[in-house]
Length: 495
Length: 106
Image 1: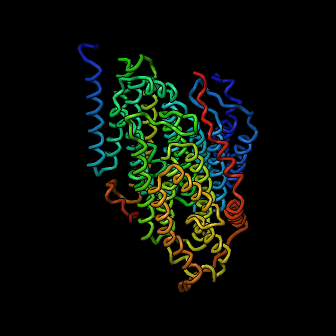
Image 2: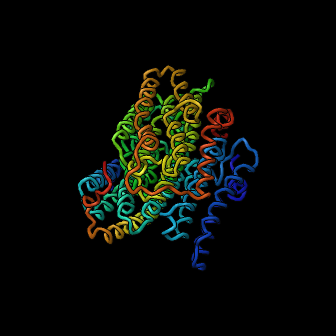
Image 3: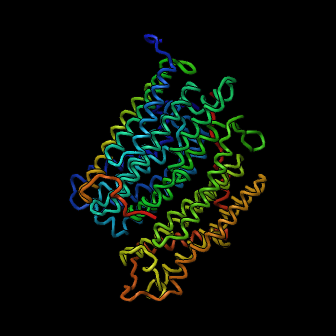
């Protein structure tokens, strides 16, 4: 189906809701002086978007807006994941002491605009749309990172994010211009046809174009060598925004990466495997990127004292594990990647939430603030953080184990034995730094003058929900796996 | 051909501008200088898009020219946000040297 502008709107309701709410919040913010309940509007909107995705008309897939956007089950998976990330980010924002001090209207409007950009990233079917949606996400993220105007760390993080982001996306569109020159089109399907049909395409030119494009996409998922911004930005941004970047922005990056490299420039075989362009060795390149990403993330995390920074490096490593599923060139691998991203969403959001609870109460993020946490009124958050960190390590009976199991199993089935071994070794190394906050919380002596921790019901309920999901889906994973398996359909249409 | 210029001439110009932009980003310490380097990178891509579109790399069409217009628009948006952030940095640090922004490291 190749739908025109009006017919496309049936499949575009969640995005329309986000757009309307963004504009509404901006307008209401001008009239109303006290913006205390704008957060509730944003929360209802992101939950509403999630609901609208659920009630969309059943369809095999379709091109929307004259082939700018594609609607298929793969897009649905990532829209659900991103909408869930937006719900968590807004929920956390409403319970965050940092966010309460900044302009509410601007803040929530930009969060929703960013969510809209991530949705579009997951559905792009055209290089122009890919670039535009990526820039919507980038520009809004710069502002959100620097939203604490009088906080030096926040401003500095925003500047670094802007510089890295500007260079990465500039490099990406320079690479895209070469691809456009080779294929003569910006449409993913047309590019695919041109690349596989033309005999005269020099593989080296295509490879260089792909490397340049990888700069922009790799920066969004924070893979080596485009990861340098991540620790600084994660540390400087307000914690709800850190969470949003770590789970939402990264998921959107994976969506676009997969859409571009799989249906964009590879071919699906009958058996569920994919064939890359011959002579263009991007799978090997990404294999190296994947190994370095997880190893470097884990090794750098070993020396961190600030919990936010530790989780930033950990999220680089986690992106490396998810990339393991990506480099296998098979639907099995992609399914493992989707399962992993879902698991990562639940446990990383939970870990950042506990960091926020402690920061709310003490104003600190360093390891000292966690010493003896369990014995000064913070037993419940301490247990929750332990669950999330165990899950990030990949201990059985948590959702993190299911994610790792699927990724490693897929790697072994595709005969990437060394890759699987490196992944397992990395998990062992990560145990050390994931357990150091746990040790501090339960075995450490509280510092002198350390305040007791008090949490409100608002943050309590989200923490309970995420901890429950981590354990429950770890013990009974079929819903997640079935959802991921259902989401492997890329609409290619009959062009 | 336009006045004896071929597609290759434009691609070489684009590459030169791209490399100058990267060089500028890597060597400048002034935040506004770095933003100007990013502008150069974006315009290098624009030169390529318009050249490919005009000379018809794989079948002439106007997609490339449309892309260039969008890039110009987004470059403006990025400059606005960039300058706003630099202004906020200046108010906090009284300098826009990126070397001074080093609270976050490790």
